[in-house]
Length: 267
Image 1 (cartoon, rainbow, N blue to C red):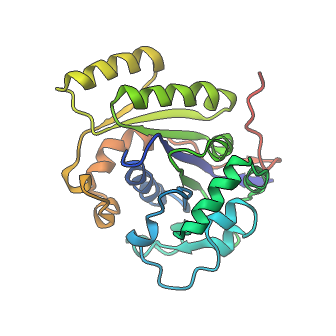
Image 2: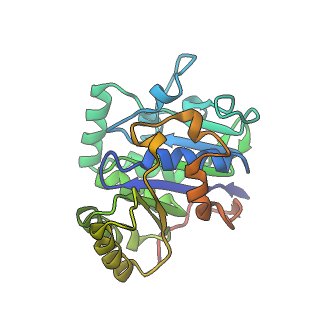
Image 3: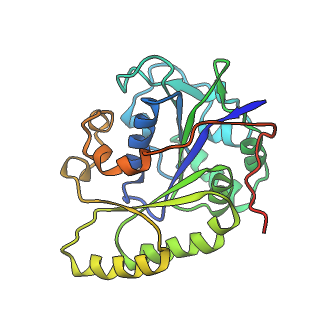
């Protein structure tokens, strides 16, 4: 019997949406409940190395792991201490920051490289001989094939967007062309929300009519609007945590299965 973690992917339509702040907040809060892995799969704008400097040589990156060229054990680093958590609570897999690595991932995505789906389908989510409880995958704003594969293995897609009709249009496209094919549950987060703005009101009216489900709103938070302050993110008193707590409520437990993966929707 295989124990699979609950997998979250944090997705967005453009840089600057606040998706990484949401993803790190989610990872920190999940790590307070169980063994959690944060995967920096935003190959287009990797920032984790700047937020949590790497103290030792990294043998492999998320770029290598997602194509099956490295094991989860080789690529993961225990960052629990940085988050003020017990050892082995929070792991991270960093993305390669080099320009060559970024371009390579763009090419692999354009070619729909099958190694990506094979690597994620077969992943057993075990680090140091112990299964993970939760996985948070921070994705790029685009790279259609990679997003589709990550959505395929996700239990929940946390979709972060600014309240604009342009981003709403991209969200609709993802709903109809990616998410509708899989079993993942969609949980939108509307960031930089201002209920007094007429533009935001117009956006929210159309969003409600289309989506019809529950979503989370997060106002502009001054201490994170100019960049990510990891010490504030990794804190139980984080304002992001307070706004996102609906996502953490009544989470499912890791599940037992006889198959590594079975998430394609039967249509």
